[in-house]
Amino acid sequence: MSTSTLSRSLGLKLVVVVVIGNIIGSGVYKKVAPMAAELHSSGWVLIAWVLAGIISLFGALCNAEVAGILADTGGEYVYYKKIYNRFFAFMFGWSLFTVIQTAAISALAYLFAQSLNSIIHLPQLLPSLAAIHIGEVFYPFADLNVKLTAIVLIIILTWINAKGIKTGAGMSMAILLLVFAGIFTIIAFGLTSSQVNISNIQMQTTNHLPITVSAVFTAMLAAFWAYQGWAAVGYVGGEIKNPHRNIPRGIAIGILTVIAVYLLVNTTYLSLLSTQQLDEIYKAGNKIAAVEAVRTFWGANGALFISLLILVTTLGCCNATVFSSCRPYYAMAKEGLFFKKVAKLNDKHAPANSLLYQCVWACLLVLSGTFDQLTDMIIFAVFIYYGATTLGVFILRKKMPDAPRPYKVWGYPVVPAIVILFCACLVFNTVFSRPREAAIGVMLMLTGVPMYWWFKKKNVQSEIPVS
Image (cartoon, rainbow, N blue to C red):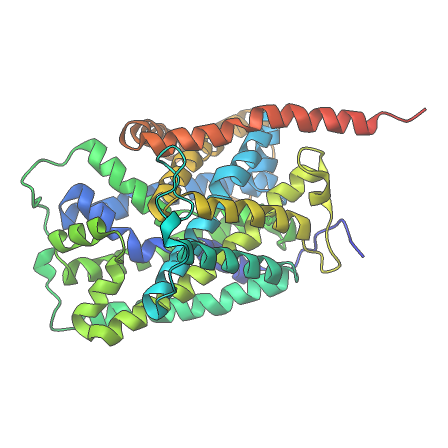
């Protein structure tokens, strides 16, 4: 038996869990190394984390005002229909499917598999095919043991979330408690260990070159992956109790919590490892900064502990992303702008078909690229839409001045203007600093143009009565 109505069963506590669970994943362990390699200054790395956190918070507050007026299942897809038009809303939803959310699932599952491989050493599979490539960009058979493990994880999490929203959200809460316990263990023992050296944190660059604005933006590209995911709570707006109040509150509480955690844990890493060591870790490609930091004061047992913690964290974040990301496709399909089967729910009130389509594409993306390639592509794409949502604050205040606003963004109009300007700068900087990832992201998003007209045509034909 299938149903067509999602049930409102998430209160504020679970909203906060969804926000934090979608954010804290791989970035908290891995992204400090590429940031150090870009900036060559531990002090500037922390500044980049703070700036990325502030911009994320500003963006979240702008999103919260829009969500407070328009909250429903589908998140920005629903907002953009009211702010702009159906075509722009579809392009966003299609971008979620082709790049933003499915690639996030793929990247998280990939890091989970990498961490598992570092613990139990998964057997090599088809090593003779590792050099096969598509345009010297995609190497589908490279690290096939890791990629197949990631695919298995995506399939399992898809199956779990098809069991219903309470099952998926409950699993996220349990995992999140373990993650916080593990992260605060690292902070407490790391900052009190004999190996800690606060003097490692300094503004001077190790290459004795001045810090450029482009380098800061490129480093923040990595930091934004660690902050990425807070907007996903809007995708389940139709399943949240009192969404106009709980979504804005949940976003603000979640983001502020994450900023505090990130500053503490990255201060720990930078106090234990020098910028040169982090640069070497990044160049090695197969090492994770957090593992090497904990290894300095707990040795091999510490490396095992942090590897297990990364497994749990990426499992939780991947589960939260699988859980929330499929909802916009369900909302689109209900309007005839996605594959028709996706509009059906199973007997657990879960969008099982939407989960299935998402699963298949995410698995293909796992085969397509590496972790950092996927995350840079995601951030480029997502900031186009973060800017569009923030612009919506100005548009809605003109179009709907009398609409009830449970939350009004602090610092209007300065804060929204800062976010829009920053989004534009980040997108343009990525085009020049990461042209390959930007080009792939744009190409995948633009496939939505012909798909929109195809879905629209099919929808019109299905409405024509048969004589």
